[in-house]
Length: 323
Image 1 (cartoon, rainbow, N blue to C red):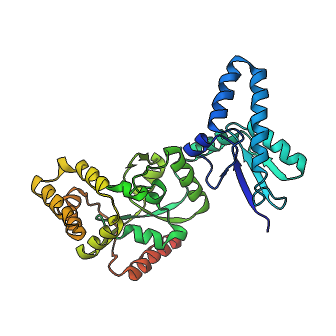
Image 2 (cartoon, rainbow, N blue to C red):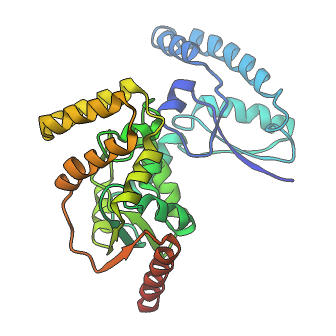
Image 3 (tube, rainbow, N blue to C red):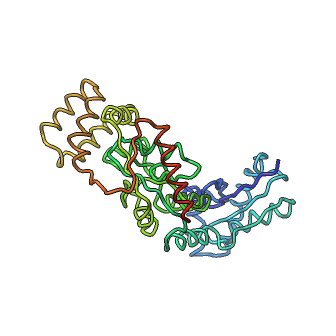
């Protein structure tokens, strides 16, 4: 079976910061080597090239042992930062061996420019945008319609609340550029009418590109409702594994905005690990009070999830008939 692999030959640190989604990391210089050669280059260009070449050859030799990726049946597409010597070195060796390979002109920088240019104007897609109280099931609807939805929270690894870092197990979000890259790939792969949640401009540390943000907030709006009992169940499911230090840290973020009596009640219930009671207090005494209702064209209930999905599909069909 012939496969296509995108190979990122930059240093691990560069790759970790942001890369082309689906790209595999096969650095020709590790972080320390890349820094060493860069420092040396400013003092002695020839010596930097000599030392860099030694490192590159050693690293490429190790990579070539991976026969699953570096197999003659595969198509290999390489890139470095700007399409310079790092990708050229690896490409030259692969080409001389006989691999089917090519380099991305301009490297990762050209890809990022493509992404930034894309987000400088509104997307061509139309949007059905879900609004509703915390825990009303918007995420479930997005998941069930995954073939034509964009999971913005999933891409940002944040639930969009004070406790939102539970989405990344409190280990950190992607960089903004990595989020944009992933969002770009999603939007490029899905056309027509897309389902999204009416997220805020900022999700944790992630800032959503303005033209995209404005487009989905100008989309066809759908208000999602759910019983308090079902909302509590969803919140407990989402946050049941939260660690105590993360829970308390997140809770302190909303301390200035919630009455002292409710804050202390939450702490009392936490000692008993009564997660349902905590969710009830947070929903009724905090989230529902700060949530701003938006007038919507359609209203649906997620208590019957199957029916809710059917109603959303019908809204989509109606929009498509009008296009």
